[in-house]
Length: 156
Image 1 (tube, rainbow, N blue to C red):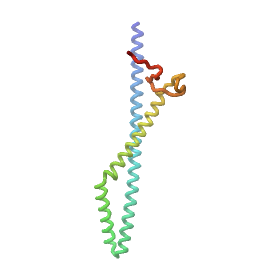
Image 2: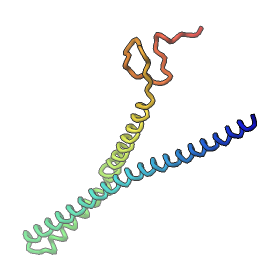
Image 3: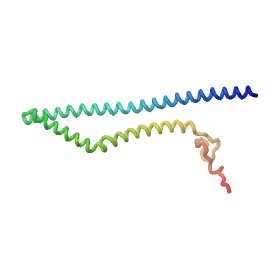
Image 4: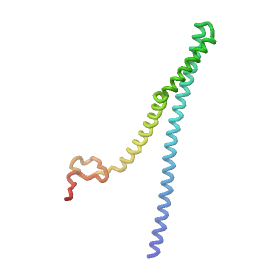
């Protein structure tokens, strides 16, 4: 009898160790998945900002040369273009919440919500239990712990 208990505890210890190692691996994979999504989002936003930056720089040069041609002085053209950039910079600083912070936070929240929804969909698919010959719909999945109305009994 003592051998059965010692074998039981050894086997339980091995199973617990395997479970903890598997759980640790799962956590590492989940962290890597979240990190990769966050880095992907970060780099895509960074690339968009870099592209936007170059477009603005070249448009600024275009405006500077155009004003310089019209006025006959490239100094005046580049000064006016710099003034436009300063006004844009001030507008971005003043309206940074509406222009940058809120859209970025909404984008991040949407990505995280989509990830949570995908994870929940996968969990719910695995958790669904079919009840044979259900009076309402025999093929309908039922949530675990759900008691159909015809089987529910009030305790008095």
